[in-house]
Image (cartoon, rainbow, N blue to C red; front, top):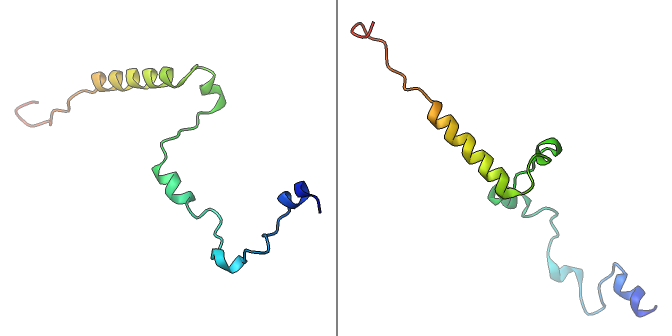
Length: 82
């Protein structure tokens, strides 16, 4: 077997034993990564409106500011107020 073929083979070298590596678990850390990640995927039509992450953050901050300024204080209705 040529060296290039040997490197791409899906077998362990003779000095290794599969039992030395323990159980293989696919996606072992997937849940942890998902919980700790702050990546947000935008739909393609929304992504076209923003050239970069700075533009997205600027738009969201403006939206938050607008929402906070338009919130009305709720005054409970009591006999004195009516």
